[in-house]
Image (cartoon, rainbow, N blue to C red; front, side, top):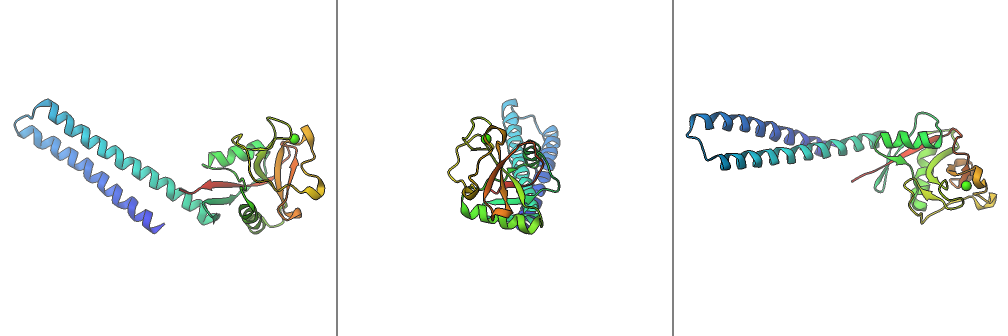
Length: 201
Ligand SMILES: [Ca+2]
């Protein structure tokens, strides 16, 4: 946090300096004999390119800072930030809310992530059992994929309850505290709490 804040300040300073320099050179060229047009155009182009590059860096640092802020409130696991929702929503609304914040519904990709998500859910949403995760079989019954339609390599269904067992009626997956983090399918229009995940660069 401190490091990127410092970076941000330096970059903003450089940016202001570059703009000032642009003004000064702009003024001084007036008093001097006019340079050939082509060269002046090139200088301006270079300066503009440099300013654009600085802006890009400022923006990417801002993004990183935003993610770190998310993680200050949420929790950081491996290369992900988890942040619990404040409200209960339908599966689609829940995912749209996560996307609007720059993430997606949490998708546990292996047992470590699943356990981390379960533990974070227990801590941040006490008393809440069921959480939407970014997994569904809306496109093809029985073929569960992630929120982007990509194939999954990890599943954690509650086989003791023969999950998923909802057929065409239940196409969205949830992680349940009452089954120690195992997954169950449910009706996508039912309303649940959820956790968003954000990938950290
Ligand atoms: Ca289904």
